[in-house]
Structure formats: C-alpha cells, structure tokens
Length: 314
Ligand SMILES: [Mg+2]
Image (tube, rainbow, N blue to C red):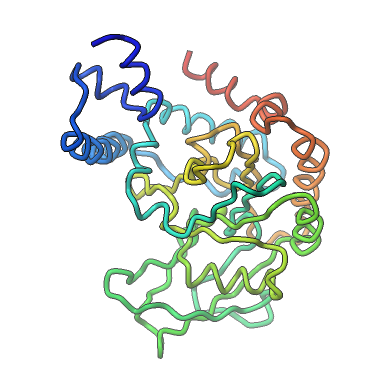
C-alpha cells in the first residue's frame, strides 16, 4: 500500500496496529467488523494488565509527591493501550454535551474523594456528616451492588432497602462552594464522575442546589471501564472541543490516563477538616490554566507528568 494512504488512515482512524497486521484498506463492511475488533482488541489489551487500586493511605496528609510517583509508576504500564478503541462503544457518548460554541475553557471535576467523600455503610450516626443525601436506585438485578465510589471499597446493596431509597452520609471538602462559585466565573464547569447517575445526581444537587454553577454531568457510562479495575475518563468524547482547552481535576490519575497532560491530580479527600487543597487548585487554575494557550503545555511545565513517565520507562 502507498504510504500516503496508510498515513491518512492512521490519522483519521488510529488503526496503526491493524495495518501492521494486515496491509489492506478495509471495505465498508469490513470496516464495521474492523471497528468491532478494535473494541475487542482494547478488551484484550486491558485484560492482560492487572493493576491494583492505588493505596488510599499514601495519597493524603501532605504526601503529594509520593502519591504522584506511585500513580505515574502505575500509569506507565498503560502507555501502549489504545483507549481510542474503547471509544467506539456507542454507550460512552451518551448525553455528552455539544460544547463547541463555548468561549470558556472546560473545567471537569471528579466527585468522590475530590469534592466529597460518601459513607455508604448505612450504619452511620447522623451528626457525624456534613449532610445526608437520599437517592433512589433502579432496582435492576444487574445493577445490584453497583453503588460504590470510584476508588473506595465501600459498597451498598441496591436491593436491600425499602422502595430502593438509599441514605448516604456525605463529607464535603472544605471550600467546595467558594471553589465552584469562583471557578464558574472563568470556566464552564462539568462533573465527570465514575459513579452511577442516581447517586451522583443527588450529590451534585446538594452542591449546586440552584443548578447555576455546574453546566453538565457525565457519569460512569461515559467512562472507559478498564478491566473492572478502574475507570478512564477519555476527553475525546468531547468530539468538537480542542483538547488544549479542557482540564480535569481528579484524585485518581487513572482517570486521565488517556490524556496525562490534561489532568490535575488532587490529594484524596476523606473527611479531613484541615484540608484546603481546593484553594491550591483554584489558585493554579486561575494563574496558570486560565491564560494558557494550551493547558497541556502548561500542565507539563508545572507537573512534568510526561517527563517522569518517560524517565520511568526508559
Ligand atoms: Mg475520585
């Protein structure tokens, strides 16, 4: 095949490895089969990697450098994974807003252990929490035991309470409200959570009761489920948005494994009343991300995630 055609396909479809295996241009029917095989290939790739959840004891109490180092060591194993193949699953694009006309940069915020921490034990003492939220589940058998925060191991059985109404004790990170109000002046804010919709909506409605600060919400179905180990939030689901204009604040680096330079890693929040990490993030966002031509360049200059990974694998 002529190399120019090959380049064109590689650029538009990201199918480099397919071409390496089979030097032919697929017909339209073959293309459908080929796309299906991309998804299967992703599943095969992901199933060959066994990643343990990041330790939650290392990533707070000021141990940020250690957390970054541990996270990047894990992420470096994923460099060869073609996350774009997983994007071919149509479910992942459900309800992704069309943000192409927005003038502001997009600020995506994770929910659990970034803005709040939820206790799903249902054995809680009421006055221990900042609030208690209630939400209904769909009570479908296949969703049983599906309510857990994205990097915590606390579980809640979807079928164990009357009328499927759940009560969850919520710890709210210091300064969330001020953070949302201030950031909203400069960014289009969206929540991008790996939690399920019913729970996440209840939390978001508590954080933004007048629905004025958070413009859109993305849930677990918008994440790439990586071998049932963790969720990746691939920003290419925003098809018309320049990736240089999107930033994701998350306590799990796995969330931005597909675009390492679009992420700001924040220490995990559980219930530390002396935690003021959101102030630090806000300062960084306003002073560095807001004026950035491309957020990825500024992030790399500041955090060196890509450089550290390159050093780890070389
Ligand atoms: Mg989280």
